[in-house]
Image (cartoon, rainbow, N blue to C red; front, side):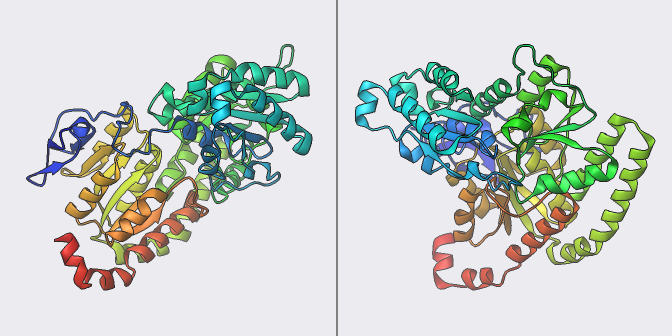
Length: 466
């Protein structure tokens, strides 16, 4: 396999897999559009590849449901408690169930074992719904999880919903988002003859209540006179999700996971949707204003302006303080969803930080167009980056601080780069005006830590980094 490509960064050819050259561009230097819908390629060690993982991160925060992974025990272990979601009630979702398929099951089939596992979960925990996830092994042996779930649902008179997320469907976890979306729609759709009355409340899609972020936004909306009908899926229950058709408006925060669901809800129930982004003060203010404008009620518009003025004045001294400490630093961003990348770009620029590298796992063409417009010429954009590429650009671009997921943390630290966690398993609230301060504080403490000076002056540092 060819190991170099023609991508020119800083006047030198940058080693990478040749198949990846269309997934890496430099802003201002190319008219080509970045490739961002490709499946992950073998050997690239991508984080995009796991379809099952994509499905589980969407559904796992449903607090009172049981999540049964039909496959080897490792699939359940590595995705156990995969989000930093908080619950105001049930903690059922913190359990992880697996059919623990063995070699014998792979040869003779695992349907009987799956049915027994469902029966055991119902007997011991009595959950209102069970989601059954298909994994790669199930795709190979061809277990009919749809039939098993249908029989179990009739046997126990609860929702037992198959999530068709075996990995061979695709090398792209967006397909897993879609599998989760189909499972959600199946849960949400009223039974024949059942009518869910319309309300003036909001559904909040793609909000996973990491570090209590849903509760924070709920406080803002309540101050405007708006209630949340149901969040999908952070701090939600099976019963609350069945009320989704009664929503007046759908807010979509995580566009990668929930645009598909929002479109289906619009087609099926006529509920309109708008995109929102509650990361950073600018995005929060903009989103609240657009929600108020959608309702068009003067008292809401006035309430929003009062809220924004009060909160902006409250946090501004802190933001100014951190800006004096961080101006001139250089940052890299590699996150899952594009909406997070857009928010982080704005937040870091408010802090005086220059973005020199930016990428996402699941960005769409329109997302990268927005990102491209916001970045300075010469910034590297990478879709579905792998560790070798990230390492190369962190060194070449002399990055001081990286915002990313947990898998990038160790790499950044080994290279003497500060790191701020913006992954789905974090426990710190980064949404709203309070989240803007939390984010600035995290960037400051990691970027300006004295530990980097000690590392970079170590005799072995120059040997490794040249």
